[in-house]
Length: 167
Image (cartoon, rainbow, N blue to C red):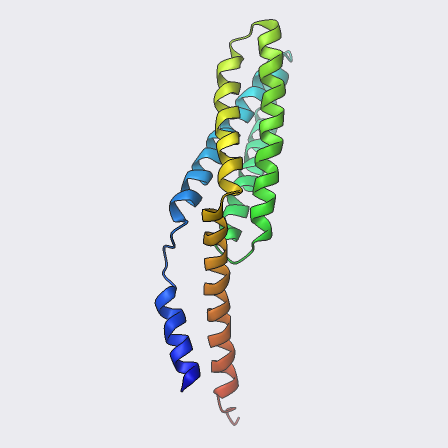
């Protein structure tokens, strides 16, 4: 009987939209904006100066698909009780911020208008870094770890309580 009361309390504490959901959504959208600024910076610095850069459209498309996978997949895994993806996203936002800082410094040196894109990307990467280190996003991650743990526990109970069928 005591176990049922504990499970009932856990179910009441678990909701589909935990208190860290706003921080998670803000971090995801900021990371996508950072990623867009990073891709625009890489295109302006490395691809555009190449003669016949129109022929590299396939390469650009592959890089966009791979890089979107770097942002979207770990965010999805974070909601599937994989807290290590939070560390990955935090490290990725730091790497993006460092690269965009270098692009900003280079743009200041050569007086390139790319400084505006790099500045926006640097700002959103810094915001992502602060959000990924906040307690709200950790609470969000822990909430989903607890939610998926309850689901796995209930699935185990269902499989252990079933009587094997006779063939």
